Image (cartoon, rainbow, N blue to C red):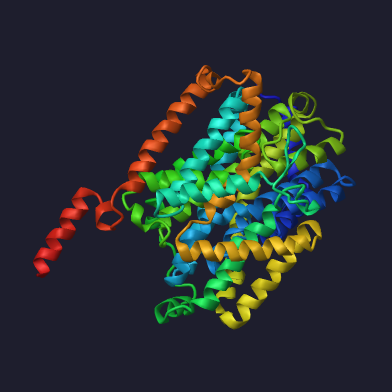
Length: 516
């Protein structure tokens, strides 16, 4: 039965002009923050959360949610325009988005990114509203064996979709896991690979390394390998044609599949948009009729990456609102902000503040409309960065990289990590090793190690725990399937024609025969 008192409280919260202003300011600021390399959504929410403690909950929490959503989307803008992901969640977006920019299709890429983000965000918000409790129930039943296998599946898929070589992708992911071991052992406290350097006790800082490997290595590539005349012409062709409705409508299976992936992974505590974008990207490539276009300007790949990472944002609120468990690092900050407002996330939030929770759901729906409006404005203004000459643009990007890397911990050692990441990224690009598996391996490493070691502790060292539970057995079978399929795709001939469907190969053969 509908409680009209709860509906009235939720509508009153949405109708407040201060709530609307706070949400709008947070969304606009989040897009700008996400568009600046080095300034992440986590950093912005963590820094600004204390200021909301002095606001009403109906104002402060929507402000933080606006920053969260805006920053996740905003990271796609520099990823598409200058191949520099504003956030880690936009790393997969850069692969096809920047390729489309080089081809003179930056306007289409930006519009596709925005529309995919809005659609995925809207559908994931409906999931949050309609099926929050069932999804959270599934997530809460996941133990350490299931999470260990889920991490392993993610690593395997990422390693195989980020480059042309299956073995090079696995090697890069393994190197990322090795780098993740640097620091203090989480269970014994012993130092690992620190070589007596106290700056490495907390491990390698992810943000400076990510900026170095993606942004700084791109600058080095541009300096040592200037763009060809064709690529330069592609950069000069600002904007290009707009995205047609028929093109976007044709991507609906990819959008639905990627949104489902993002919503599911977002509902699992500890997994975030950084992982969802790559898994959605990998599934899209595996189901695509043109997998050879991925990484070379595929609209399907761009839509999958953006739908996957933006669907995480509403879904990450599922474990937070239902069980009080943070879905990612940002929702962990949001839990602190709610507690500072005197509200306890979880079942008590639903019981004691149902009106506020309903208002929060309405705010999330309104945010989708505002994201479309602000996103179009951001595209109109921020796309002008492609008009900046490379001699001016790349020094500015370098300055932002240095400032962003230093701002994370205010540590000069992070600048060394930035330089190391840039050099390593440059070498990997030159030798054909994909960068993304290393970064994601570093990101997943701590959680993967903790899940494996906890599982072995619970089972007294027996590996049977990974197949003795129904959930872990299902994930183990899925892992075996992923390895077989990805290995087959990675070891078969790499020629473009060999990767085409049989019908297309016949057409291509007939066409060549006719020409001869």
